Image 1 (cartoon, rainbow over the protein chains, first blue to last red):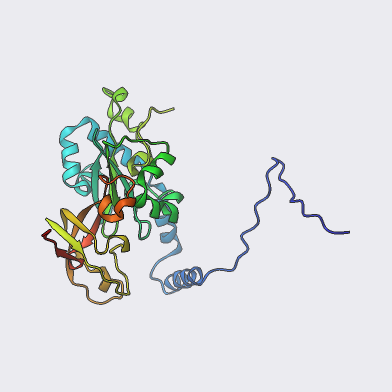
Image 2: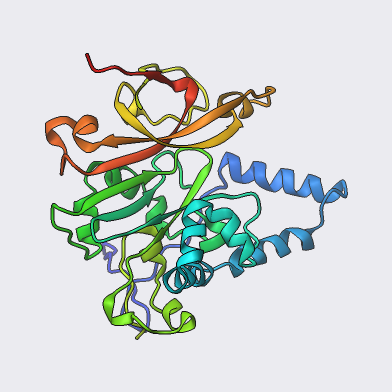
Length: 212
Length: 88
Protein backbone atom coordinates (compact mmCIF):
# COMPACT_ATOMS: atom_id res chain seq x y z
CA UNK A 1 0.00 0.00 0.00
CA UNK A 2 1.46 3.31 -1.04
CA UNK A 3 2.50 5.56 1.75
CA UNK A 4 0.28 8.58 1.92
CA UNK A 5 2.01 11.90 2.39
CA UNK A 6 -0.19 13.60 4.95
CA UNK A 7 2.05 15.69 7.18
CA UNK A 8 1.44 15.12 10.87
CA UNK A 9 0.03 18.21 12.60
CA UNK A 10 0.97 19.65 15.96
CA UNK A 11 -1.66 19.70 18.74
CA UNK A 12 -2.48 23.29 17.72
CA UNK A 13 -3.24 22.14 14.18
CA UNK A 14 -0.18 23.56 12.48
CA UNK A 15 2.31 21.50 10.50
CA UNK A 16 5.57 20.70 12.24
CA UNK A 17 8.59 22.50 10.88
CA UNK A 18 11.31 20.19 9.61
CA UNK A 19 14.42 19.97 11.78
CA UNK A 20 17.33 22.04 10.53
CA UNK A 21 19.57 19.00 9.95
CA UNK A 22 21.83 20.52 7.33
CA UNK A 23 25.61 20.24 7.70
CA UNK A 24 27.51 23.21 9.04
CA UNK A 25 28.67 25.59 6.34
CA UNK A 26 32.35 26.29 5.72
CA UNK A 27 32.15 29.59 7.62
CA UNK A 28 30.22 28.08 10.55
CA UNK A 29 32.99 25.52 10.94
CA UNK A 30 35.58 28.30 10.64
CA UNK A 31 33.85 30.36 13.37
CA UNK A 32 33.78 27.39 15.76
CA UNK A 33 37.43 26.54 15.03
CA UNK A 34 38.66 30.11 15.57
CA UNK A 35 36.55 30.55 18.71
CA UNK A 36 37.83 27.29 20.22
CA UNK A 37 41.43 28.15 19.38
CA UNK A 38 41.12 31.60 20.97
CA UNK A 39 39.74 29.99 24.13
CA UNK A 40 42.32 27.15 24.21
CA UNK A 41 45.19 29.57 23.80
CA UNK A 42 43.83 31.74 26.57
CA UNK A 43 43.18 34.90 24.52
CA UNK A 44 39.55 35.04 25.50
CA UNK A 45 37.20 33.03 27.69
CA UNK A 46 33.83 31.49 26.88
CA UNK A 47 32.37 33.70 29.61
CA UNK A 48 33.69 36.83 27.89
CA UNK A 49 32.10 35.76 24.60
CA UNK A 50 28.78 35.05 26.30
CA UNK A 51 28.94 38.38 28.14
CA UNK A 52 29.39 40.18 24.83
CA UNK A 53 26.45 38.32 23.30
CA UNK A 54 24.34 39.25 26.31
CA UNK A 55 25.41 42.89 26.00
CA UNK A 56 24.36 42.92 22.35
CA UNK A 57 21.05 41.25 23.15
CA UNK A 58 20.36 43.77 25.91
CA UNK A 59 20.47 46.72 23.53
CA UNK A 60 17.03 47.63 22.32
CA UNK A 61 15.22 50.34 20.34
CA UNK A 62 14.27 51.85 23.72
CA UNK A 63 17.69 53.55 23.72
CA UNK A 64 17.02 55.28 20.41
CA UNK A 65 13.51 56.16 21.57
CA UNK A 66 14.92 58.01 24.58
CA UNK A 67 17.21 59.95 22.28
CA UNK A 68 14.36 60.97 19.96
CA UNK A 69 12.04 61.87 22.86
CA UNK A 70 14.69 64.21 24.21
CA UNK A 71 15.12 65.77 20.76
CA UNK A 72 11.35 66.34 20.56
CA UNK A 73 11.24 68.15 23.91
CA UNK A 74 14.59 69.96 23.95
CA UNK A 75 15.39 72.09 20.86
CA UNK A 76 19.02 72.60 21.94
CA UNK A 77 19.49 68.83 22.21
CA UNK A 78 17.85 68.29 18.83
CA UNK A 79 20.27 70.78 17.31
CA UNK A 80 23.22 68.99 18.96
CA UNK A 81 21.89 65.61 17.75
CA UNK A 82 21.66 66.78 14.14
CA UNK A 83 25.11 68.42 14.37
CA UNK A 84 26.87 65.35 15.83
CA UNK A 85 24.61 62.45 16.71
CA UNK A 86 27.44 60.31 18.08
CA UNK A 87 28.58 62.92 20.56
CA UNK A 88 25.02 63.81 21.59
CA UNK A 89 24.32 60.10 22.27
CA UNK A 90 27.48 59.73 24.35
CA UNK A 91 26.62 62.89 26.29
CA UNK A 92 23.28 61.29 27.15
CA UNK A 93 25.18 58.31 28.58
CA UNK A 94 24.80 55.74 25.80
CA UNK A 95 27.78 53.48 25.20
CA UNK A 96 27.77 53.40 21.42
CA UNK A 97 31.41 52.39 21.03
CA UNK A 98 33.25 53.88 18.06
CA UNK A 99 30.06 54.20 15.99
CA UNK A 100 29.78 57.25 13.72
CA UNK A 101 26.15 58.27 13.84
CA UNK A 102 24.06 60.68 11.77
CA UNK A 103 20.54 61.70 12.85
CA UNK A 104 18.11 62.59 10.06
CA UNK A 105 15.11 64.73 10.87
CA UNK A 106 11.74 64.08 9.27
CA UNK A 107 9.76 67.25 8.58
CA UNK A 108 6.49 68.21 6.89
CA UNK A 109 8.36 68.11 3.58
CA UNK A 110 10.95 65.34 3.96
CA UNK A 111 10.71 61.69 4.98
CA UNK A 112 13.95 59.76 5.55
CA UNK A 113 14.41 56.00 5.16
CA UNK A 114 17.50 53.94 5.99
CA UNK A 115 18.87 50.92 4.15
CA UNK A 116 22.19 49.20 3.62
CA UNK A 117 22.21 47.87 0.06
CA UNK A 118 25.69 46.34 0.32
CA UNK A 119 25.23 44.35 3.54
CA UNK A 120 23.17 45.10 6.66
CA UNK A 121 24.80 48.08 8.43
CA UNK A 122 22.54 49.18 11.27
CA UNK A 123 23.04 51.31 14.41
CA UNK A 124 23.15 48.18 16.62
CA UNK A 125 24.79 49.97 19.50
CA UNK A 126 21.74 52.20 19.78
CA UNK A 127 18.79 50.20 18.39
CA UNK A 128 19.89 46.62 19.10
CA UNK A 129 19.92 43.89 16.46
CA UNK A 130 18.27 44.69 13.13
CA UNK A 131 14.96 43.06 12.17
CA UNK A 132 15.25 40.15 9.72
CA UNK A 133 13.51 42.02 6.90
CA UNK A 134 16.16 44.77 7.11
CA UNK A 135 18.78 42.20 6.09
CA UNK A 136 16.66 40.66 3.32
CA UNK A 137 17.72 41.05 -0.29
CA UNK A 138 14.21 42.28 -1.13
CA UNK A 139 14.32 45.25 1.27
CA UNK A 140 17.94 46.07 0.48
CA UNK A 141 17.40 46.24 -3.26
CA UNK A 142 13.86 47.61 -3.43
CA UNK A 143 14.32 50.44 -0.89
CA UNK A 144 16.49 52.40 -3.34
CA UNK A 145 14.51 51.51 -6.48
CA UNK A 146 10.90 51.90 -5.32
CA UNK A 147 10.92 53.35 -1.79
CA UNK A 148 7.31 54.55 -1.97
CA UNK A 149 6.07 51.08 -2.87
CA UNK A 150 8.12 49.58 -0.04
CA UNK A 151 6.81 52.19 2.42
CA UNK A 152 3.23 51.50 1.29
CA UNK A 153 3.75 47.84 2.19
CA UNK A 154 4.66 49.03 5.69
CA UNK A 155 1.39 51.02 5.67
CA UNK A 156 2.88 54.45 4.90
CA UNK A 157 1.59 56.61 2.05
CA UNK A 158 3.14 59.98 1.20
CA UNK A 159 1.91 62.47 -1.38
CA UNK A 160 4.27 63.49 -4.17
CA UNK A 161 5.07 66.85 -2.52
CA UNK A 162 6.85 65.11 0.33
CA UNK A 163 10.38 64.20 -0.67
CA UNK A 164 11.52 60.68 0.18
CA UNK A 165 15.21 60.56 1.05
CA UNK A 166 16.71 57.09 1.06
CA UNK A 167 20.00 56.83 2.92
CA UNK A 168 22.24 53.97 1.83
CA UNK A 169 24.72 53.13 4.65
CA UNK A 170 27.47 52.28 2.20
CA UNK A 171 30.57 52.90 4.32
CA UNK A 172 31.37 54.10 7.83
CA UNK A 173 28.32 56.06 8.99
CA UNK A 174 25.24 54.69 10.73
CA UNK A 175 21.86 56.42 10.70
CA UNK A 176 18.86 57.04 12.89
CA UNK A 177 15.70 58.85 11.82
CA UNK A 178 14.15 61.48 14.08
CA UNK A 179 10.49 60.90 13.22
CA UNK A 180 8.06 63.81 12.85
CA UNK A 181 6.28 64.34 16.15
CA UNK A 182 2.54 63.67 15.90
CA UNK A 183 0.41 66.65 16.94
CA UNK A 184 -1.56 64.46 19.40
CA UNK A 185 1.59 63.88 21.41
CA UNK A 186 2.41 67.57 22.00
CA UNK A 187 2.89 68.46 25.65
CA UNK A 188 3.64 64.94 26.89
CA UNK A 189 6.68 64.29 29.06
CA UNK A 190 9.91 62.90 27.64
CA UNK A 191 9.27 59.52 29.30
CA UNK A 192 5.74 59.33 27.88
CA UNK A 193 6.91 60.38 24.42
CA UNK A 194 9.57 57.66 24.35
CA UNK A 195 6.73 55.07 24.31
CA UNK A 196 5.44 56.55 21.03
CA UNK A 197 8.73 56.04 19.22
CA UNK A 198 8.90 52.63 17.56
CA UNK A 199 11.93 50.89 16.13
CA UNK A 200 10.44 51.13 12.64
CA UNK A 201 9.90 54.88 12.98
CA UNK A 202 13.64 55.28 13.64
CA UNK A 203 14.46 53.27 10.47
CA UNK A 204 11.93 55.36 8.54
CA UNK A 205 9.47 52.60 7.66
CA UNK A 206 7.02 53.49 10.42
CA UNK A 207 5.48 56.48 12.16
CA UNK A 208 5.35 57.18 15.90
CA UNK A 209 2.09 56.08 17.44
CA UNK A 210 0.26 56.21 20.74
CA UNK A 211 1.27 53.28 22.98
CA UNK A 212 -1.32 50.52 23.07
CA UNK B 1 29.30 70.90 -5.75
CA UNK B 2 28.46 68.40 -8.48
CA UNK B 3 30.42 65.19 -8.77
CA UNK B 4 30.29 62.04 -10.85
CA UNK B 5 30.94 58.58 -9.46
CA UNK B 6 33.63 56.78 -11.44
CA UNK B 7 32.34 54.10 -13.76
CA UNK B 8 34.84 51.40 -12.83
CA UNK B 9 34.44 47.77 -11.87
CA UNK B 10 37.55 46.78 -9.93
CA UNK B 11 37.51 43.53 -7.97
CA UNK B 12 37.83 43.56 -4.18
CA UNK B 13 36.09 45.00 -1.14
CA UNK B 14 34.56 48.10 -2.73
CA UNK B 15 32.00 50.19 -0.84
CA UNK B 16 30.71 52.10 -3.88
CA UNK B 17 27.37 50.55 -4.84
CA UNK B 18 27.09 49.50 -8.48
CA UNK B 19 23.80 51.33 -9.08
CA UNK B 20 25.51 54.69 -8.44
CA UNK B 21 28.57 54.23 -10.67
CA UNK B 22 28.63 56.80 -13.47
CA UNK B 23 25.87 58.84 -11.79
CA UNK B 24 26.04 62.56 -11.05
CA UNK B 25 25.12 63.95 -7.64
CA UNK B 26 25.80 66.82 -5.28
CA UNK B 27 27.94 66.67 -2.17
CA UNK B 28 25.68 66.80 0.87
CA UNK B 29 28.43 66.87 3.49
CA UNK B 30 31.90 65.60 4.27
CA UNK B 31 32.01 63.14 7.15
CA UNK B 32 35.78 63.01 7.68
CA UNK B 33 38.58 60.65 6.72
CA UNK B 34 38.52 56.89 7.13
CA UNK B 35 40.78 53.96 6.36
CA UNK B 36 40.37 53.00 2.72
CA UNK B 37 38.31 49.77 2.94
CA UNK B 38 39.72 48.53 -0.36
CA UNK B 39 43.10 48.16 1.37
CA UNK B 40 41.90 47.66 4.93
CA UNK B 41 39.92 44.54 4.04
CA UNK B 42 43.13 42.81 2.92
CA UNK B 43 45.27 43.89 5.89
CA UNK B 44 47.25 46.27 3.66
CA UNK B 45 48.30 49.50 5.34
CA UNK B 46 45.33 51.68 4.43
CA UNK B 47 45.49 55.28 3.27
CA UNK B 48 43.16 57.74 5.02
CA UNK B 49 40.62 58.86 2.46
CA UNK B 50 37.97 61.53 2.61
CA UNK B 51 34.44 60.20 2.81
CA UNK B 52 31.60 62.28 1.37
CA UNK B 53 27.86 61.97 1.47
CA UNK B 54 26.51 62.45 -2.04
CA UNK B 55 22.86 63.14 -2.90
CA UNK B 56 21.44 61.75 -6.15
CA UNK B 57 18.07 62.54 -7.71
CA UNK B 58 16.08 59.36 -8.40
CA UNK B 59 15.61 60.61 -11.99
CA UNK B 60 19.42 60.60 -12.38
CA UNK B 61 19.79 57.10 -10.94
CA UNK B 62 16.83 55.35 -12.58
CA UNK B 63 15.95 57.62 -15.55
CA UNK B 64 12.34 57.52 -16.71
CA UNK B 65 11.75 54.42 -14.59
CA UNK B 66 12.15 56.49 -11.40
CA UNK B 67 9.20 56.03 -9.07
CA UNK B 68 9.22 59.77 -8.26
CA UNK B 69 11.92 61.86 -10.02
CA UNK B 70 12.24 64.35 -7.15
CA UNK B 71 12.95 61.78 -4.45
CA UNK B 72 16.62 61.30 -3.62
CA UNK B 73 19.07 58.65 -2.51
CA UNK B 74 22.11 59.58 -0.47
CA UNK B 75 25.20 57.44 -0.01
CA UNK B 76 28.70 57.67 1.42
CA UNK B 77 31.25 57.63 -1.36
CA UNK B 78 35.03 57.80 -0.93
CA UNK B 79 36.67 60.79 -2.58
CA UNK B 80 38.86 58.59 -4.80
CA UNK B 81 35.66 57.36 -6.45
CA UNK B 82 34.49 60.88 -7.38
CA UNK B 83 35.42 63.29 -10.16
CA UNK B 84 34.26 66.92 -10.53
CA UNK B 85 31.33 67.31 -12.87
CA UNK B 86 30.63 70.45 -14.88
CA UNK B 87 27.38 70.44 -16.82
CA UNK B 88 28.39 72.10 -20.09
